Length: 492
Length: 116
View (cartoon, rainbow over the protein chains, first blue to last red):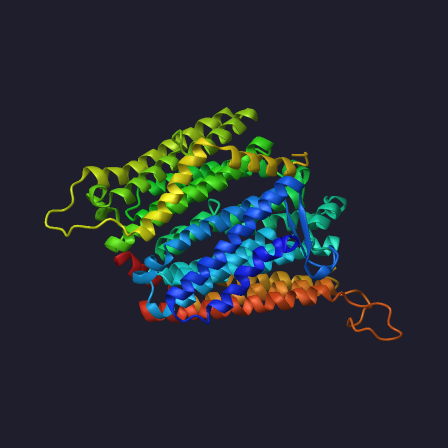
């Protein structure tokens, strides 16, 4: 059983998806999905524990040896990502049954859970696999289920957002496919570990440069790096609340993982950062993303839009940490992947609660909400503070490491810009606080009740995690540091 | 030079045609068609890299020493399935968009969204 953990991680939700289709009662389907996701979470905890104590786990599918067969390779980085994805998925699912009551017609509830499980399984697959082509297949499974999930949104604009995402996402995935093809052409292997060994021999060829460019651009489309982010705001804003909470916390993180895996492990540090101007390119795009997206967030009238733009800005921070190409920089990125998942999970889930009570997330509807839904609004405020990076929240921890990494490289102007970017976050979070707490509810309006417990419990689990991991950083920092050390080839 | 790399030239031409259609056309169906052509070019690319000079189909028979590489063929079968799924999902979305907006022209849809 323990020996098969790596494959169980992916196969349990993947098998649960078609089984779930047989359950016609929505509540049953929900409990079943929750069970599958919970099992995946347990598996990932065990995996992380095993990886931290005894090192990388290699699992050969069907018993075929590595370069011929597909292998799953779990090291600290994979295990960390698996934990984030399954934890968020499970917590978010607690609220799913209540949340989709009003947002999705009853006859589609089962389909919703099937798609959710497929999406979860595919994301776990992307992270777990050690085979480049397998990555593409899982990427497409996760994307196709994502398009369908987004199209389930109540507003008709969800359809249009989903269509745009489909076009952009398919182009991105096809780019990755071209890149993988070119790499295969030069090396004759698809196994990541094997690729890493064979690529240096042919690294100076134009084919490999082209392959690198295709893979990186393809991944950047998926992770919504500025200026390839155009699909993201509408897709997040019009998708059902649960879907937004799940994707905002996990989907772009998986793309960040792929970026790290391909640049550090497959192509290698010296190829990615010395031969190509990747570093300067990513610093500039990351910073541009932070400023453009944060400024755009300030002018949004729909809060889901606002936080979607803020997500693009947060991706900018991760990219800046990544481009520092030092252990500290990568630690900062991985920490922010973890911390941002907690923040955005809490924020979008709280917005789901608002959506459930007032049927809209327009800022104009938030008047006086601070009094009527105190617990939900408090969650949004704490999540917002964490986004800004106030001490005692997780946001502070990742910003701290990021600034440390940037200063370590002697990039003082970048450090200043990062802090200025945080000030923009103050502005957009304040706009919500101002409307919710300092504007009275419109006279004669109905009183709004606090969100039901099925929302409050998962939201507050995430909020407390936001504070807990802001104070006790042992788990997150230790794992992130171990992961980035192993990527740099140092023993942890 | 040209004839030797004939397949690859076709790949690039098809890829650019497909990509151009996706970007330049406002009709949602045409965009999906462009996307299909774009993906098809990659299928041809994979099949082309599998060709070994003088090799035959990868079926084990006596008297044949050189085979073409079957692995890219298998890979691309998977990618074709993915491509069909994407096209089907895209077309299904277009049907829903037509129901909801009464149009499949990008400009008109955006105009209607801006009115809301």
